[in-house]
Structures are given as C-alpha cells and as structure tokens.
Length: 235
Ligand code: IPE
Ligand code: IPE
Ligand code: MG
Image 1 (cartoon, rainbow, N blue to C red):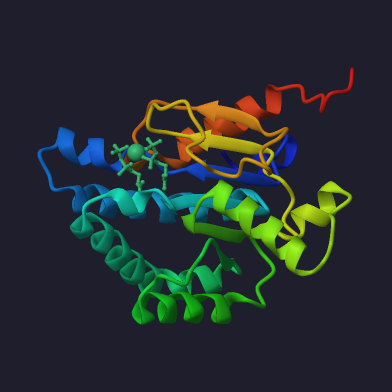
Image 2: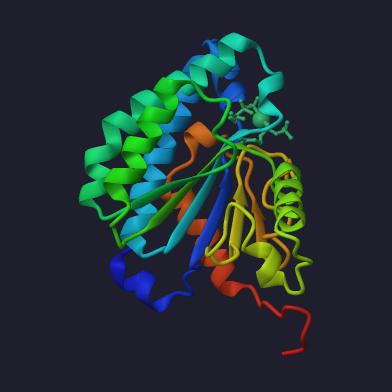
C-alpha cells in the first residue's frame, strides 16, 4: 500500500498478530523447526517495518505463549536464541525508524542474556514516538488476568470499571486492538488478549507466518476498512 492509499483508507490504530505456522513451514520443506522460526523472525521484521511505514500506531505480536513451554527444550531455546539475535541485529534500524519496543508477559523465567537484550532494546527505544511495537513473550491471557486480579486484591481495590481493571493488565495504556490477524490456518485465539479483543475485528489467513508479506498484511487492512463496527450499538 502506498502512503497516499494509507491516508485515505481506514487504518486500524492497533493491529495484533498471532504469528503461527513456523513449524509447518519448516516441515513442508524438510527443514528443522529452527529454520521455520528463523524465517518467522524475518517475516516479523518485514511486518514491523511495513506497519511503521503505513502509519499503524500499535503492533502487537504473539511470539511465545505461556503454553509454548510444553515444547521440546531444544525448540524453546532455539526460539529465545533467535530472539536475542534479531533484537540485537535490528535494534539500530528500529530506533532509526522511531519504533518504541516493549514486552507483554512475564519475563521472570528468562535467562540473564535474554533479559539483558530485551532491557537494552526497551531502554534504547523508550523515547521514540513512532510505531509502538509490543512483543508478547511468555504471554498468556489467563495468566495476565489472574495477575491483574491479584494486584487489585493486594492493593485492596475492587475495580469498578473496564479502565480500572485494564490498567492492571500488561497492555495498560494501550488501546484495544482494532484488528487481529491470525495467519497459519487455525481459527482460535490460543490464550491471546482475551480481555482486549472484546470488540476487535478478526481476520484469519491460511498463509503460514514465514510466508506472510506486507501485501498479505495490506489485504487484512483493506478488509478491515470495509467492515462495519457497531460495538453493540445500532448504526
Ligand atoms: C508459531 O509457529 C511460533 C510459536 C508458537 C513460537 P508454530 O511453531 O506454532 O508453527 P506450527 O503451528 O507448528 O506450524
Ligand atoms: C499461538 O500459536 C502462540 C504463538 C503464536 C506464540 P500456537 O501454535 O502455540 O497455538 P495452538 O497450539 O495452535 O493453539
Ligand atoms: Mg502453531
């Protein structure tokens, strides 16, 4: 999509993406899973760049769920190794493009090396005012909601409004997604942003995440532009 098209089309302020299909992509090619995750990281970087170019304000990607620890230890450590490599490699460009990075999820089980790479990225980009890039890592929506409920109890607070409770979630201060995209062919949420997706438009694609391109992203954006959102009202 060109800059001009972006300005005239209805642009979602916040797009959330479930980056799914890396394993099947690798399997189809007779490659180790690691290669699928690597190709998935390349696709992610392209989409961040593109989202920033077309003026999306928030991009949230589901990179590792609280349930993904069930996978083989070798796969899990491969995913985190790739994360460090890509974060370090892409940091300068993200910063140059004015992208601000943060993490949604529980970072406490991560190794020192992973947390150091994440801290460096967050610190370097914290003053940036362009695209906000939220990476959901060791993220699970139920764990997030339980954590928020516990924080309310600890503070002796009974939350009264959506905002009171939403302010306790990892996404505090971030508007709810307008559009959720799930490539990879599955039609489920897999414990992603259950509270935040209440009125989000859902878009599913059969393209496996490593094959996902800016053109595919634009298809989702233009379908979003054609949807009528009612939020329970009658318009
Ligand atoms: C998504 O791809 C990446 C993570 C969940 C970390 P998958 O690894 O789930 O790929 P498929 O669904 O098995 O193809
Ligand atoms: C969702 O994909 C999690 C991420 C993309 C990080 P999964 O592959 O883990 O989801 P299921 O198991 O198909 O529901
Ligand atoms: Mg999957």
